Image 1 (tube, helix red, strand yellow):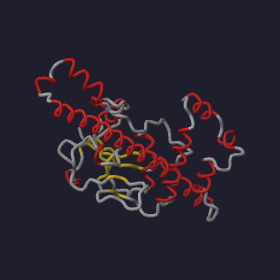
Image 2 (image 1 turned 90 degrees about the vertical axis):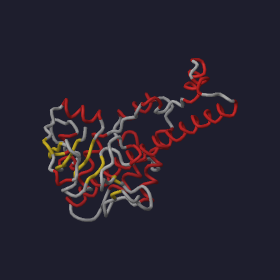
Image 3 (image 1 turned 60 degrees about the vertical axis):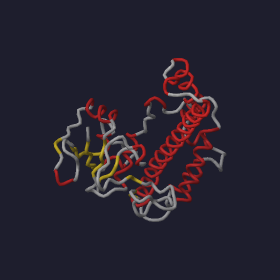
Image 4 (image 1 turned 180 degrees about the horizontal axis):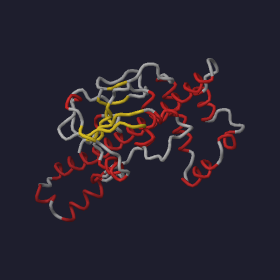
Length: 266
C-alpha cells in the first residue's frame, strides 16, 4: 500500500497523484473517504475521538496569552489536573487506560490510544487549514465579483493602487501568497507504525521534510519499479524514530521503534 505522508487530506498533498495512493484516516468521522485507509480496531471510536478533540480545543481556547499555556505545560500532569475531574486528563484516562489483560496488553492498548490521539490532532489541524483556505478563497471571490460589478477591467487591476488594495482586502491572515502551515510531521511518523501494515510505503514529496532528511543524512536508495512509484523515487527502511530525527529510541513511545518504508519523490 502506498500511503501519503504527512498529509491525510488529498487537497493538501503537494506531490503528484499516484495510482492507488491512500490517505491515513485516524477515525474522526463516521465513515472513511473512498481513498482513505482506516485501520481496523482503532482504540477510539469516532464518537469518543470527536469528543476528545473537542475537549482539547476547548482547553486551548481558554488561554489568551500563549505564555500562560507554556506555564501550565511546565507543570507535571498531576500538578495541573489535581482536583479537576472534568479535565482533559480525565478524558485521556478514561480512553487510554485498559484495566483488563496482562501488563503488556495494557501498555500496548495505552500506546495505541496515545498514537491515535496524535494522528487525530494532526487530522483535525488539516481540517482547520482547509477551512481557512476556503474562507480566504471566498473573500477573494467576493472582491473579484465586486470588481466585475463596478466595472473594473484587467487594465484597472494592473494599477498599483488597485492591486495593493485587493491584496490587502483579500488577505485573511491565513496561507496567502504560497505560505504553508507546517504539520508536526515528526510526531506523525512516530505514531503510524502501530496502525499500518508492514509492507506499507509512506510517500513524501514535502520539500521541507525532504530537506530535513537530507540534513540528517538519511540514506535513500533507488526504489524498486514494482512498487508503483514514479521514475526517480528513492526509498529507505528504518525505525520511525530515526526518520523523526531522534538520536535514540524513546522509551515512552513504543510506536516509534517500528520499522517504516519511506519513499521520497522530488
